[in-house]
Length: 229
Ligand code: CA
Image (cartoon, rainbow, N blue to C red; front, side, top):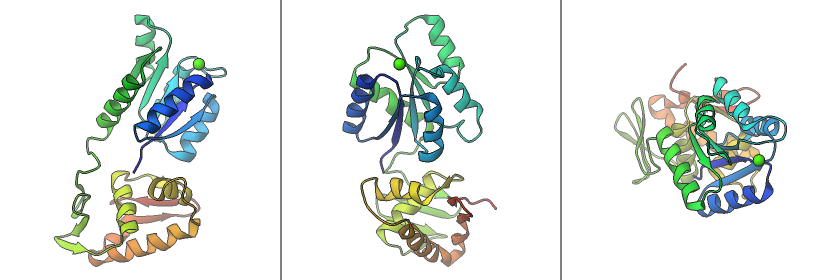
């Protein structure tokens, strides 16, 4: 599953350089040149990390970072600031806005990717191969095994990927469209109803010890994985 990086930068050449480097490193990339638009993209696409340029036309990158960090639904979204400024004061101001890290232009693709990975690691201590556990439900990506109360659950590869995504992104609502992007991949053409079919199969597979209740339907929005409620 590829992490999605949202690049907020009004200078197209820099956006392209970032896109090129990030895609080569295996990330999915979305981009915009506008901070207001970035807030919409964050809500719609749920990126895993936002890269924000300090100097943007309508709203500054510092203001954007502050808004993301002051909002409950985006507080835990990692933000890296890009800036041409190297002054210590600006660095402090950038970090005070809540940004998690700071990269001074010009930067190399290698440095950029290293910083992105470091920040993502900080937020997500588990790597893609690590087993994910939620109460007595456990998923092992290496052996492709899901167990509930020590019973092995039988499920197809799509249900497995779906569950892996849910368990690593708990308590957040995802639309069918977002699930298609995250679990099926952006370039695959499948109908949104396909998501419902696999959700149904996943619930059935989890039904053995009542874990199907973890897959919650949020009316009008989509689905959420949660062990609460
Ligand atoms: Ca700029």
